[in-house]
Length: 74
Ligand SMILES: Cc1cc2nc3c(=O)[nH]c(=O)nc-3n(C[C@H](O)[C@H](O)[C@H](O)COP(=O)(O)OP(=O)(O)OC[C@H]3O[C@@H](n4cnc5c(N)ncnc54)[C@H](O)[C@@H]3O)c2cc1C
Image (cartoon, rainbow, N blue to C red):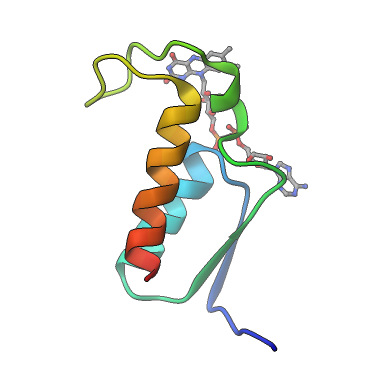
């Protein structure tokens, strides 16, 4: 089975996942590939200064970003 994608994003840190969200939001086919999910977010046990989050962790934010991407990706 082969799939064609209009855009491929390399990396699933905050930048790559944000790009994936915005691309998928436009209904443009997009594949995010990465060595991990979250990138440097995985090194942050306690995340305190990210807008919209009061008490969170890096891995939890990474999962939330992934879920948002997958929601738009369909
Ligand atoms: C300990 C620590 C605490 C931090 N605390 C905060 C904070 O409180 N608030 C804040 O705003 N920022 C914080 N930061 C900074 C924040 O984590 C980074 O600015 C952010 O992760 C950068 O996102 P990025 O997507 O550009 O890169 P990265 O998070 O580095 O993601 C890069 C992605 O690319 C992938 N990748 C790299 N090379 C390849 C390859 N060859 N093939 C496939 N995939 C590849 C990696 O696996 C990863 O998924 C902290 C960073 C650290 C280390």
